[in-house]
Length: 386
Ligand SMILES: Cc1cc2nc3c(=O)[nH]c(=O)nc-3n(C[C@H](O)[C@H](O)[C@H](O)COP(=O)(O)O)c2cc1C
Ligand SMILES: O=C(O)C(=O)c1ccccc1
Image (cartoon, rainbow, N blue to C red; front, top):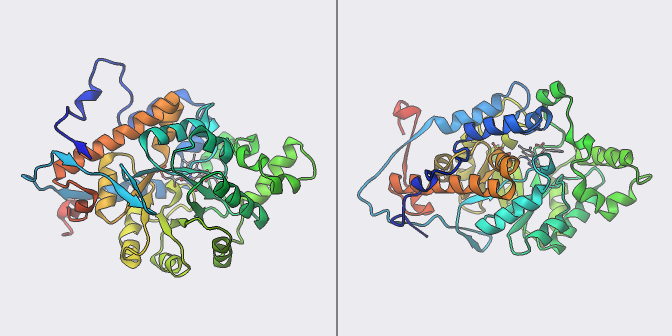
């Protein structure tokens, strides 16, 4: 619960200190000047002609809200509940791989920020640090493990059970990356973090993976990752088998079609992340916010629906929650904060997003996430009706 009478959420940023980039565009500009072209292009870009990347933003931009006033907004409750636990914010850290590209402390800095802010942290399979090291860096943070299926299924089961043993509380199986999207910026820059070994953390610490290598050379490790991390055979039977092998809740990340969300519920899945991978996978896909309402409709409150892709400011989070998301996950913004100022930069970016969300809720006249569902949204500035 935030009391909005205790000082202004915006003006605390105007304090004669060196300004930290306040908007996504400012962040991206600052990071473009700081990072090398290869890693920067890897993080920033979308697949193909970047239509999906643009669709994500366009989807948010086309909604406007009609605020209500005279509603006593001196206390704003942004809390949500997921899998029986209450969190103060409706934000999550989306799984982002290979964080050492952005900062030497990589995932360790991000999980510490997550711990401080009480925001659930989803660690990627292709992280720079091992899941056990991340768990040790922030034993009390809520951590979920994002699983990339492996061509050798035993590696996937091994990683899932390591995550369970290390105290991770859910498995997020990403279903939209059975191979890499057509990422032209990486070809232009001749840059592959996978080939450079940035994704080592979880693999070199996995006994099943290591036993599958012919020797312990760097080349064998890279070949092993490439052979396993892309997994075009993935299918619903694999999902059912994974479910039999873990006691943790399983979420599917990358669902966009309402029929797939129906299958997810039917197969006993515990949550869905509506996402187009930040426009990095199939180009020409709908903005993830545009996929949300039909999925919320089908799922009908049976399991949580989380949204990511293009949530770059508090007002975007508000719109997604108003359209029925239970929470939103943030990708590139926190990576940019990490690149600029490590753990502190991550905290600054997430705090700004959160503070803007609180200001937006108050000014819209909604005092809780539940109340946001009743906010009036119009498309295309009301031209198409409500
Ligand atoms: C550099 C980078 C690496 C990513 N790595 C992963 C990953 O390992 N696993 C995964 O499920 N999603 C991955 N994603 C996708 C994010 O989880 C998320 O879906 C996406 O970033 C959301 O869009 P946004 O960046 O517009 O917020 C990655 C995204 C970026 C930018
Ligand atoms: O870069 C990504 O978006 C990503 O998810 C990924 C997938 C496989 C290997 C490396 C990164």
